[in-house]
Length: 345
Ligand code: PAF
Image (tube, rainbow, N blue to C red; front, side):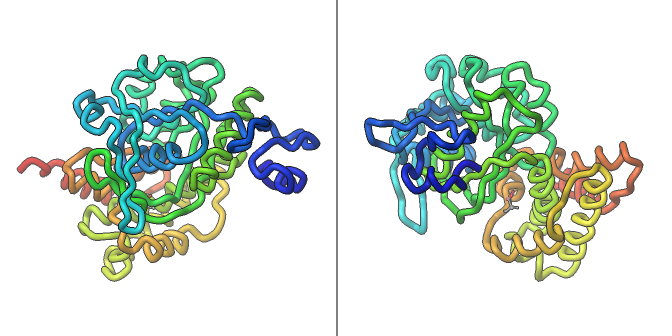
């Protein structure tokens, strides 16, 4: 990551080191934030989309828009977003629209819709793209990888993994639940100008309070996060409890460990590099996010479709192709689908 360059950090905390070829950010000599601002569109007014939108809007000189596919909700929350941090509420007068034409071409698009909504969302947001636009897509699981990688709208998209905590309180209102590192990177080498955009995006996100690094093995990181979601999300729905409670319910803890071990077996068979012990990591996340309501439980409580197919479902699909048995994950899927089937009576 270019931030490692000492010349760079010494003279221009967020600017270009003219001595170091790995840096691409131009110095904004008029003062200000140190790099040319971007026009940014955030897609999806869920917890992460709102957290990104409200954080980016408050920092630098970027132009930030939020795109919501629902015209009614977009009109209701337009200019009235609320960010809650440590029980303090900040009002963020950010433009929200359902019409991508109203935004026009952008430098950076952050796609924060649910995994199952990725393909239709990409079609809808085509007007935001020029050949210089960078898409960074943030979803749980691995179900979105193929739809994004095969899309004609942004075939050279970058993928993001974040440990930032966010809870949707009401339409347009988000609570920041804790900071964590965000990693962004390309699955395959992209054009040099998109690598430049990625570096700029990392700097802008970091300056907005989202500590972000670029990585060249994003697939490993997507799988690392997947294993954590495999162990936590479905079980919080089945036991209707916050993440930390899974440690206190013996059968939940046992299923968590077995589900993550199945996931690790599939990952290693696929040649994914898994750092650290994923079971310990997942148990650790339960402890550090003990009071969190997982994203899947937030969906289940709102009686919305969950990301079970993109998380445990995607794992089972990979396992089948490799002729590996993953019975615990199959059981978790069955139980979550039963709960979804009874949403409406
Ligand atoms: O999906 C979520 O809720 C989060 O990824 C995690 C890590 C399980 C914490 O709640």
